[in-house]
Length: 123
Image (cartoon, rainbow, N blue to C red; front, side, top):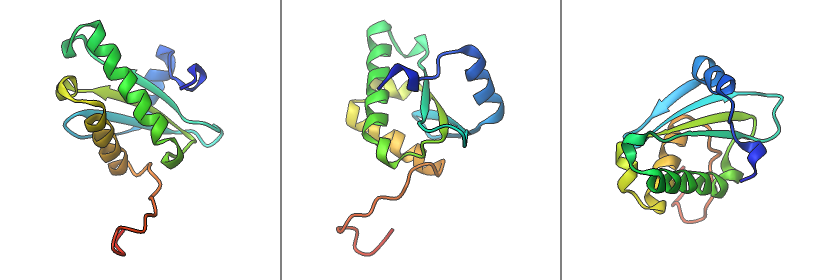
């Protein structure tokens, strides 16, 4: 993921926390701030030291970035996202993290629905 698609400045984080909407599940808290003028989404990550050492925290951040990269086509591009990892994430592999992120993003209603032929006519 390109660096210009990341939220880095404290001012941006504070604006998203203050004005954005939050949704959560057991593994993640996600803040979403709609920015209609934006052409590509940006993500900011927060992984506490309580989750493990630097190696563990960096691995979690890589997994989250990769999950967003794989979900890129389904995400609404005019949003800023902040993802806060909770304690259970430290023991999860990439596929579990991606599944949990997908779940919380569906709750936030920011994922476009996929159309697959194998869903039996259900949405």
